[in-house]
Image (tube, rainbow, N blue to C red; front, top):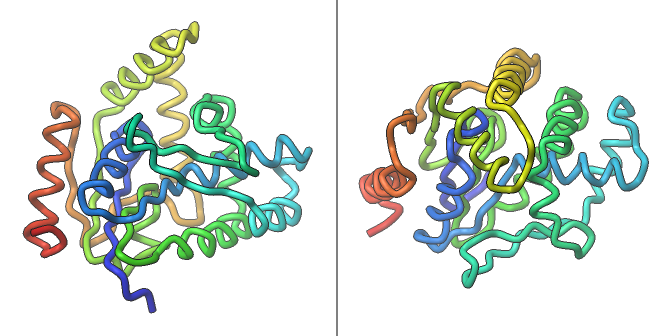
Length: 228
């Protein structure tokens, strides 16, 4: 039984989970887990170690031995993600790694192995965990469960803007198709499909700024007694 306070933040890609969850963890003084990063880390590690995405047994072994670390860089206001001692934060945000992560996430054994790794992050003083099944599967006993969402159009527009800022040559239509395809995979997979927990507080961020969403999240934590 996990005794430390846990806040889960679930939702589809592009809803703003990562940025908001890291900021919330910082405000609360909690640890932070980007669960989606674990799948991307495994995808990147599988590529580096030449493990095929359909080799479930090898992926499970690799997942159990991932050398990973999350370090919050206060000066830059971002979380650095280390794989085998190397900062791979930027590589994890590429579309190719995201696609590989989504593909390997369909394996039951892989998800089970990564769920166990995720639960190890629940340490004092508390944890903010973001992902797609944090409140439904990984931490069903969480003190507070948030489900962030936004329209597919808005999420595609946000992703398109991010890619343009990175210098990628993409079209908004292509990005929208990727968003739709990923939504379909995430919501229709047999194991831990994307859905809000029954007791989750749902927030649509389509028309909200990141600051406004963070303020609302902080207000909710005060009500729940997690922040005074």
